[in-house]
Length: 434
Image (cartoon, rainbow, N blue to C red; front, side):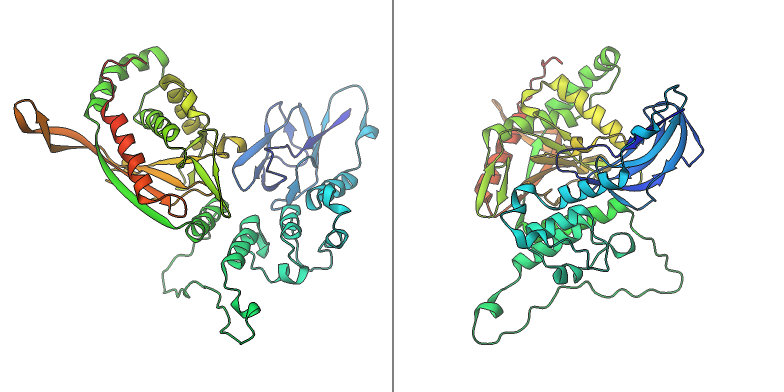
């Protein structure tokens, strides 16, 4: 018999830890190769860890709810191999300590900032994950200050979102009291109104993903000065073109073509012409993104929302975008996305029209500076200019709305972008092939 170690996998450059949410197998259970053992969650996506070998689960080293650094052994499986290599298994405790130290204290700062290395927060009575410790050290948060941060994680733990929200609030808070000789009124912490319950009310705790969504939406409103502009678009040519090609496309490719890939293709072209929209804000610096990576807001069966990303959308043809959109949407709804597939977006599109909404005012997906909302397509009477004069005709009309960060995107720029996007969509070639 031999033992095989199950490792918390690396799931992206920015992810150094994950939370164990559910053990799908228990000690003593038999495992097939590629059978899922445990469900894990990061601040980006939920996923499962499969067993790379066939055998019996003999050890589980962490409990549900534990936050584990990547690269750490989380379980062991006994296989039927002839070689007995149990002695070759590395010491788990040492590995965990090394990984935690590496995640919490950057090596290049260990000597330059000796005072910072003493901040291990070991004297605190609260548990802090390596990621939270790392952020606290980077932002020079003392142990006493860290202990005052309200945590909304399991058992009141401080999560990544909690500390980032605290930092954003601290940065935006007035500092006049500290700089002025004369006393000033203390800064009051913004608190939500107290909620009272009545007989028969049902209280449902948010799941982990809904908590993240709630925190991110509030943070986005605090970070960006939101403004929304609207424009209507005549998409009659697109509707007729899709009706013409959809059956043949399905027979040839085995999948449907929706309006979504068309909007992505047109938006990618417009973003290339207006790089100021494909950007981020870093303090007083504007970051113009080289790549055009468009996020696709996708509703999940449980009511939550996730945003997989179409990378380099401007470099893909319509067929490539269509297959990419269908693949990501299907895997998103089946919880099969990888963390890297929902990160790195530079612009986002959300489809209000899929629920028959005419339009809406979306919230920016940070650190992006704009998000486009696509409304429902409806038949409406419209005035058309012809050689014989103006006529009224039935056309397919859709409203586009774009929320943008007024710190770097003004109304004129947003208006020019939407006008150009309207031109691209309305000039859709009815003879286009896919």
